Image (spheres, rainbow, N blue to C red):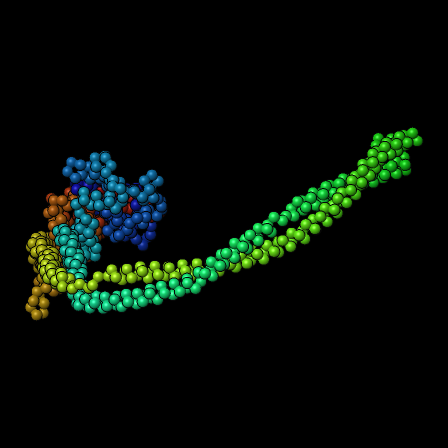
Length: 631
């Protein structure tokens, strides 16, 4: 990839910044921290500027800062990191946003202005990594150099960490994946073998059970014959019992049926007596009598009201109807009117009273007639109930007889069915064919198990091929001479011939045998016998030589080339001669990498660089950049 421009907004300590990336030469990135008089350069945001490069590509920084943690704490939102670059003739643009007012938390990917973003952030991140051609670990361990981190920590890494770094650099992950696939297939084959062995144990058990089952067949058939005899005896005994019961009770039941016919004819004589007509007549007269009594009460109330009005007119001075003062003529007129009304009421009252007297006489006669008929009805009813009780008793005796006979028939039918089933059971057959069939299965099973064991052995061989001592070791053996040659070339330029680096894939044990262990040995003819025993300046030279060698390894892979590298505090612990040698090496590096960013807080190194970018953090904690042009 040929990266061209980085644009950031509200990222870490920066609110806004833009930096060109292509063919910039060696650029010193220095810092000024105005937030505290105790700081000069530290904490200004120098590293944060280039961390945006890592974040744009991999969605995290080299220190693992990601998600909302990258948002500028002052702004609190609208973070954007945009990285542009070419792959061949195609222009790619990566845009990452956090808490953005328009794009929310999206990552967007474009080629030649056309959006090619995948469905999810994870899928888009994978697409970006495919385009860049360098995975995160490879990038951090080759393109980024800092003491104790990235490529700068290779010498102090464990054997496992060194192997992981080199596996990423030379793409050994494909062999790791192949080995995991092979291991999974071995595990699957083990499971098949376990299942097959369990199947063999089951077949052996089935074979051992054939004799047992054959004896069980004979025993079961003997039991069946005994059951047939028992059921036949039960059937014969039950048949005799049912016939005896029928012979003893059938004549009795027939006599009961005749008795029922006689009782039914007697019962019918008592069913024609009814008291409904007499009762209806009593209720009808009673209802008329109640209605007349209600009318009489109404006229009586009216009579009382008129008498009250009459007495009031006699005493009052004013007319209760019109309210005028009553004179004798007026009073007499009103009294006459009331008397006329009272006369009509009394006529109707007397008329209804006479009717009530007549109705009471009629009611008395009707009740007497009802009582006479009711007495006759009661006598018939008592006789009817007595007859019905006897009929029901007779019918219950018949039902009991029929139920008993039905029970005998059901039991006999069930015994017939049972005997039919028992008699249909065939005699036991020989199980010789079954024995031979199982033996055939056992023979086939042994061959199948043998084939599975052979397949497992082949798969285990594949696992060994892709193990650390297999093809991966051979690949590392091919890489090791390259790393030795390049690292010692750079180390010679930095420290002369006193120091030598030796990469190895095997170490000698105490017993003289060799074991697989990727190691980096430092031979210092005028210093310590190990890496840790040397001075910080000597270790810094070694770290830088290793870093440059690792970068050469990365650049040798056409699919993972890049046009910039980053060196963070590469001059720490180096004297002035060492620093000048480093700058000389980095300038030679421009033949393969167009832009080299060097982060440093050492003021005395500034004259060694043609271009300087100054990162200034103001008192509000916001970083800005300035400079970056040639002197």
